[in-house]
Image (cartoon, rainbow, N blue to C red; front, side, top):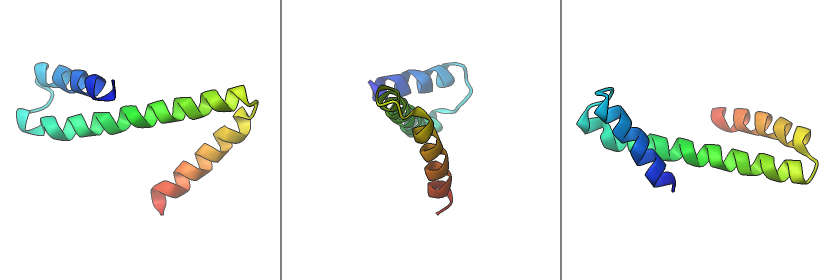
Length: 71
């Protein structure tokens, strides 16, 4: 599913001549990574809503993702 969505997004950019053919693999990898990240965060937030820990989870994600990005 992730690969399919990434492929469609990359082909859309390629068809609109926003990217060149030699950039296809790079954009495909980037979209796969982005889609996987979005799905992971949505699943985490869904579980936090089910467990009634939404605010704590959002705070954790904000702090953890920020720290992880710079260390």
